[in-house]
Image (cartoon, rainbow, N blue to C red):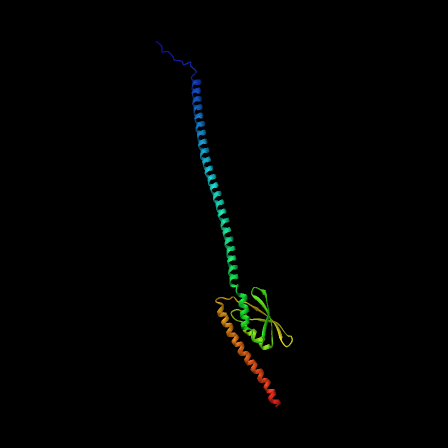
Length: 220
C-alpha cells in the first residue's frame, strides 16, 4: 500500500503575513501609547520646572520690590537724619551765638581805653565785624588794637584812620574766634588786658608830661 501525500491547500502565507501585520500593529500601538505617556510625563515635568522657575522669579521680584521699598525708606530716614542734624547744628549755633552780641559789647567796653569810643559795629559776615570809633590819640588806638586779640577776637586789621576835629576816627576789621567754655574766663582775660592798657596809657601820659616839662625847664 502506497503512503498518501499530505498537501496543505490553506493560504498559510497570507495567514502568516496577517499575523505579522497584527503583531506589528500591536507593537506600533504600544509604541505610540508609550510615546504619548512619555511625552505627557515630559510635558508634566517641564511644566513643573517652568512653574518652579516662575515662582522663583516671582519671589525674586517680590524680594527685589521689598528691598527697593526698604532702600527708599532708608534713604528717607537718612535724609530726615541729615535734616535733623542740620537743624540741630543750627540750634546749637543759635544757642552759642545767643549771647554773642552782648558778649562783644561787654568785651569792647572792657577793652576800650579811656579817651577811645566805639561809635558803630557792623557785621560783614557771621564771624567778621567792622568796628568804627573815635580816639584822642594814636597811642589809644594802638593800645586798643593790641588788646583786641584774645579768646574772643582774632588779630585786628586797621582799615583806615583819619583826623577829624582834634580826634582820630578809625575803622578796624576783626574776626570772632570759636569760643569754648564759660564767658567769664574771656571776661577775666579781657580785664587783665584792660589793666595792661591802663598801665601803658599811664606810661604814655607820663612820657608826654615829662616831654612837656623839659622845654619849660629849658625856657626858664
